[in-house]
Length: 217
Image (cartoon, rainbow, N blue to C red):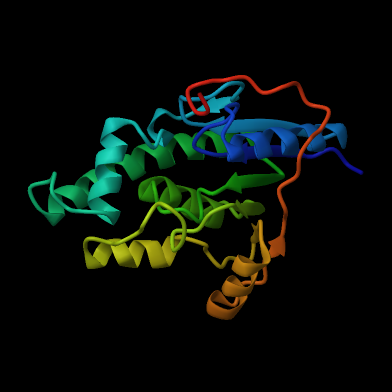
């Protein structure tokens, strides 16, 4: 098997949340297969090779935008002001991502939750646009979807709804989607005509014992 240059991206890596743990296992597995693996993350990370500050979902500016786009509009003067802020964040993230992608020429990228969970709309927009423009082979590992779970997605304006429908769980020829259960596999096939693969979470019994941190203490 030829060695590949692979990037794995998520809002955070190296922590003890479920997605970070899955990323660590995937990185270890791919490296054992002889591939070179790089990690992309926001600033709350351990071991990331590429860090983009605006990818942190709880950074005040990003959290404010999230709440006002998918929960309740109350912190901007009007729709236009919020839209201007959304695109400003998008432009900054896209510029940084483009530099990373063009300088590294990855053979494939794995994206965890960033294409399926609507907690950071400008980041997803930037990712999907570049995946399409640069024709980057992508595996989208979708642990959670914007239509389910604890984070309710209620678009506050029609333009937000349009962005979510356009960019989340994108149906592109160079994107392969994976789900962690058969229920969402069925939903994607029936409602989006997307044939995803079921990629169950696994447990590495050889890993070191977990320790308490800011997420599990």
